[in-house]
Image (cartoon, rainbow, N blue to C red):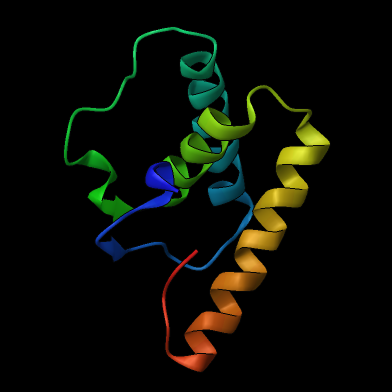
Length: 91
């Protein structure tokens, strides 16, 4: 999926603050999903961060409940942890 492409994963380990940033990004992406202007300039999505991962999810899935966004964040955090242990880094 084009919206999930990136050059480098620079996410720090997941925590509550990063979950909040993920949800904020999701909400921005969901607004873009509804036809509002894309807030990202070219190159910003080259480095994967929690905020723009949430944004990417919001552009694909649209508006979602807090519970759903939290569940997706938890799944992404689990995948990040597993990939770091295995030595790979993709979402």
